[in-house]
Amino acid sequence: MTKKPRIKYSRILLKLSGESLQGKRGFGIDPEEVRDVAARIQRVHSMGVQVAVVIGGGNIYRGTHESKKGIDRITADYMGMLATILNAVALQDALEKLGAPTRVLTAIEVKEIAEPFIKRRAVRHLEKGRIVIFAGGTGNPYFTTDTAAALRSNEIGAQVLIKATKVNGVYTDDPVKNKNARQLKKLSFIEVIRKKLKVMDLTAVSLCMENKLPIIVLSMKIPGNICHAVQGKTVGTTIS
Image 1 (cartoon, rainbow, N blue to C red):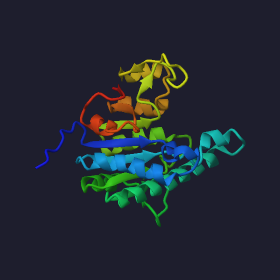
Image 2: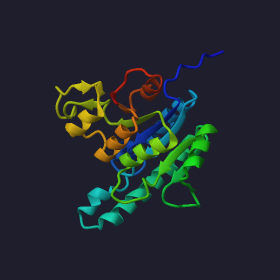
Image 3: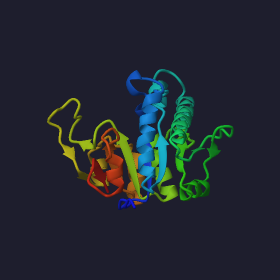
Image 4: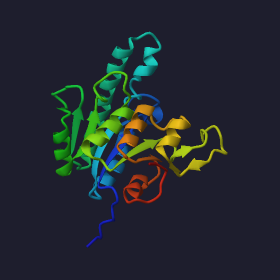
């Protein structure tokens, strides 16, 4: 018999950017990239981990950016929320093709393609071994999908919030622009807030701090990164 790996976090929430689905296109949804992301999520799920996902919509529409061009901020934010639903359905399709039972729960009602978000329903899906994708942000304008991730993590009782980014953790400077930038292995919530590190927006960080929910920032592109994180191995940057 194959011995199951030891798991530190049995219920996680993974925060993905919409850009993680666009691949080299620079815009929209790249089916090949979606399959790759789905395969990495399915691998963690196959370890016996209960997995929830919050996905952004920046690959399709970024509300805060577009509002600066003249579109009403509230309207722009709702358009961004709709973009996250498109991404969630695409990811669900890829996961189910890999044999992973998946449910999309959304803060904005779209009953033909997704279930409305109800905390008890979300937890029940997780307990039944289904991957749950949260879409529609918080359902309210002025809140980012980072805040939605922090909120949903606490609502479902996740043990850790894992944020997948382009780089493997938090650095002293932009590692793409500055080759001398150092990776920070551990940070406190207060350090993130005081130094104004752009890990997540301050509302999300504060919500995690108040509820003692650790955040792990890592690169999803590094093979096995998320699996190592749920096993408690040191990867990326841990904020606690």
